[in-house]
Image 1 (tube, helix red, strand yellow):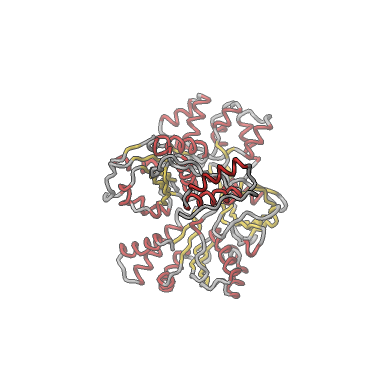
Image 2 (cartoon, helix red, strand yellow):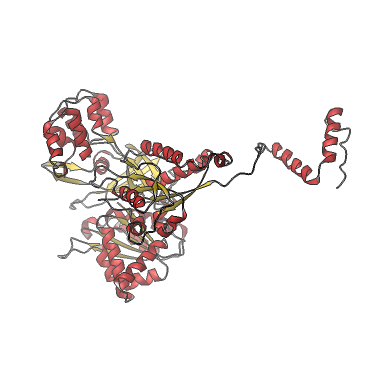
Length: 583
């Protein structure tokens, strides 16, 4: 052992303290003295002393968190589960359904599933493959698994939370044990989801001794690095209808400015816009329910409550609150869904008049959710602005003219210099690849919005990869959105190629999927050479038709069977080269 030099007489300690230190340090080993030196140095730079560990820490209990998400809500909740799980003594692992191998499920012991339902009872597009595997005959037995399911949905659709319900039932059918009852959430899911997460982790609680020895990490100090979920105020700096005056469409280019820096968005992200309801509709509802004099209620209905959505749940609430026999008869006779088609809250309160209290009318509504729109700009080109592309939705049912809540708010009432609230909604699954990678963009109508951002971004960074845009709308003359910009992009090389489909310009309607088929050889060649493919727009028809066209292209060009061609496209999805942002 190396001899320890005694502290000098000039050391800033009293004689007794110096002698005590000499005694301790003189008997200490080199390792002990080195540890003490590091400890004292840490204190000098402001580090807190390490906690005392009396026993070796045991391994944290594993927890698998699966999410099936379309709009990002299920993914965000999965992250919330993981954050709280770490503090509760778990070792969480988050898995996107898009990456799930169902055969791996028996390897886990505790599984949390957060699943959204898309459209009329369908799984989110990225979850389709794994969902089919789970529901299929080859799914493995799961006797050793304990699970809990949170279902996200929208009561405006007949198949409310259908995917979450199906997964919950299927896991039990395969032999897994339910740790806690499933909870089905509507659009206002925040509070019930938070309560469910807490209860689920309590039900899954690992061995207490193990939890006691797990160091809980508080991630709250990282909040500054996370995307803010708080709305910000934006000012309308441009409000332009991109369709001609002879078009039967109205598509608004909306440029938003901010007091300070714009939200830190990337190409592919969305902005959630907080709309206000049509004052004419709100006033008609207040008049029909005898509440026209309540200004406070009117303000709430304008900006905070959804006054258009009508569902079976709304009818049930109305019948319970008013004891209206005709509404009860609709429900009892099974005619409610038929009656609801094409109707809104105003139709209910006018067809079945009843004086309501403020509380009763409020109970018939739910919180007014923001609407998400793909950002149509790159900050590298537009600076501290964000651009949106919004098509006004107008239609007529049951003798009444109607309009989309957010789209007509933008088109009719949100003019230049007006302000509105927005919130950034990141979409990490719809990001540009490396600048050298080729991209294929398919975006008819307002689906072209993110691809304007893509082209701006790649122009700004001088991306070497080629880019190919498929765009379609009704008429070339009246509905060619951002026409001059695409022409400029072709000239400067930031866009390599564009193929167009205008459905009303010829006797037989032509859509983007038809152009994909016509260009199938080059399309497959680009994909075989590593191009990434992006689709944005309508989920109900367009996205499905486009996928079918790509499968057919592979089958024809590569001389594959339909089944093998399907596997080829599925491999693009598994390899994260087939991206969708659909609505």
